[in-house]
Amino acid sequence: MDGLQVMSVKEVSRYLRISERTVMAWAQKGEIPAAKIGKQWRFLTVSYTHLRAHETSLHLVCRLLLE
Image (cartoon, helix red, strand yellow):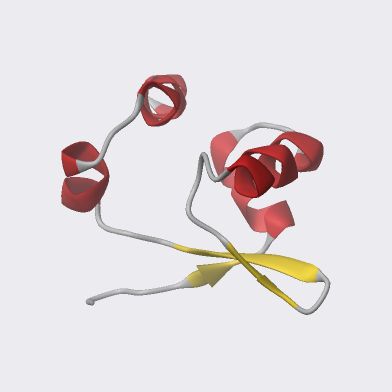
């Protein structure tokens, strides 16, 4: 995957402009793709095309907030 990047909870919260608590809650519920490594959540960035193909209402809200 081209341009693959691993992000922390803090980086995702800054990117989406939401609280770290919300990022962790979404990750725990499986609403955003994440993996827990030890005690820390990690998130892989994915291409815009991939997100559009698998977009949920939550993703749509996040995308609209960023536009």
